[in-house]
Image: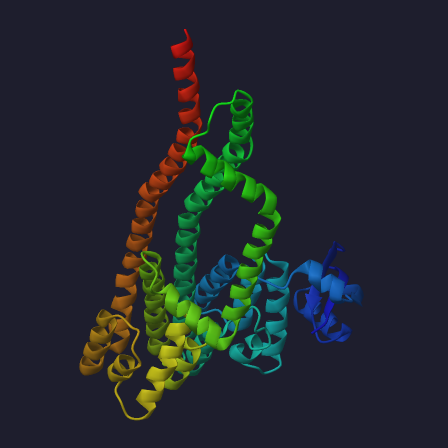
Length: 405
């Protein structure tokens, strides 16, 4: 939908400049007239590939969450959907989202539903967002649905923040270890060995081994880096394929410590998504279709989810479908079974989501706590080996000097 730049004046003659999304130049004039402005001049903003690239094609998740929150609040106050969009667009920091909301408003005026208007922007509004908005409109509880969607997306962002914070310390330690080892083994030790060789001091076996490793790395460092890059690239391409992604993600769940964290995160996402969509009135078919589409963040569990749904379609209960498919924690199976018996499936998944929220935080903290002593042991071992390889020949030199004097 085209965007127009305009100049307009109000009743006092004050000049206003801005941009607006509209169907045509006449539509721009009509829209400004509704706001008490008289159009002076307008022109369509031409966009191309370069313009779109520099403008960016993504909206930050936090901005989208705030938009959902404010839209839910204004709708709860009784404002019409068009007035709610007008009020919220003024507070949006994202130019792209402002433009999208403008196009949504135009589509709504044209007789489309909010879901149909948002459907035109799949890069901004995910399938889960669209499904919840659609059910909210159909069931007449759009403000409640938008509020639950915002809370769920906020939870997802909090989990991402926890994971990012958890990776900062390990990454910093690995960089420091690599730099220190590179300096000592690549520069200090060879220089010392050269001095000792000139003094005809025999080098101990451990020093020779470290020196040979240093010489090998210096001679082949480029090939080593290229090999590592090639392996990473192969793994990246392999996990992008359907079967490769399932295999890689399956073994990720079996990794010590990290596997537990990945399992808890995927289970928490499953629980929160299911509870949110089920309470919004989305059908079981649509719920499983959405959950199987890269929502859990683990291809293996998403494949098992598809298998579970196939069993449910054959007449099995939801709990039995999950159990036959396999790969899911026993606690999840028990909660689903209890929810089906008591008719409180959304509450069961809601409680599971809250439980696994705490488990994610606990396991991430446990991973960090386990990494710190492991890092100290590795760091101490490496430095001990380097210091030993340096001190042993120096000790021999000092001993020989002592014998002479």
